[in-house]
Amino acid sequence: RSSSRMPGVFESDPLKKGHAVNPNVIDLNSELQTKRQSQYDPALEQKIKSWIESLLGESLSSDNFQESLKDGVVLCNLLNKIKPGIVPSRKHSHVPYICMESIGIFLKACGELGMKQVDMFMSADLWDGTNMLAVISCLQALARLARNIPEFHGPHLEGTTASGVHVSSRHDHNQNQDETFVSDVSNQQDNDDV
Image (cartoon, rainbow, N blue to C red; front, top):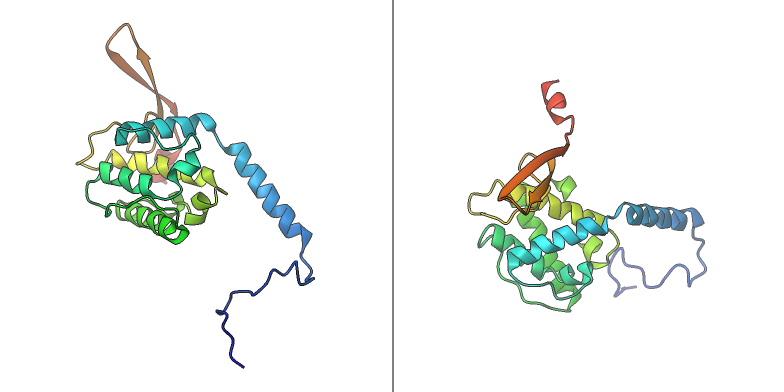
């Protein structure tokens, strides 16, 4: 008997067929989502959003950060501002597979720039909005990488350096100085010596 369904694709939802579903799996997913949400920093999101808008020279299309990035076009445009021509230009779309393709192009180009896989998110994390913490972490990693790209002259995301040491910047508006303080020094140097 031939089947028109693709291997690995279920024709129906197991819940509708009366299959047993382990409630612990649902609870674990819920716990992970709650944990991600508790770690999410709206102030950091705003800082990254401002950096992106500054680089692109325009406001994002929505107040909802995930919605603004969801089709991948802003991400590809961001990369082209950091390293011109690294990705082909993309057009805004509401077609899911085109959006996912644009996100994939962004992620592949991040890898070409030297981003570690651990710093990248999965396309579904952004598309579904299920792990915006990973998206934010990826954009922070991109900001760090940008500092090492000769063609990129800023603006730079405040709080990042090429080495990944986090710094905070305090501006004295009465003077034309920028004092930078190291606020979180990792043990990376100690680990490199071992």
